Length: 104
Image 1 (cartoon, rainbow, N blue to C red):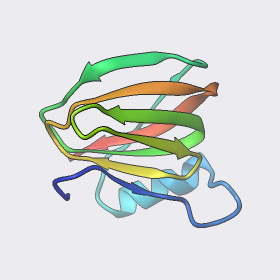
Image 2 (spheres, one colour):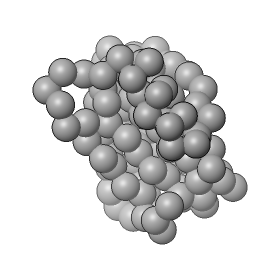
Image 3 (cartoon, one colour):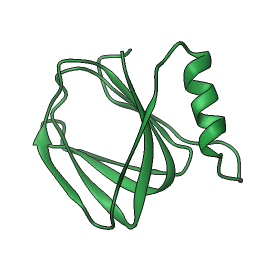
């Protein structure tokens, strides 16, 4: 994993299914789990002791990186590689969000 958060946009015009993203993660040796939030839910700034990989299955979410002065908006299929100790917050989009996540 890099030292900076990295977003990899979904390249196809058709959004992937959850099973497609699950397979991508497991093929990479990751152990994903699913989580979801309702529209406009908010996570306050925090960090983790581990690297994580997040794929958006449906909906959208914006991760704020207050120490870096950046915001990363993800939609269906987009991937976020978030290094350990990166302070981040999040704002769920108006349609809610479903994600797959794995810790490294």
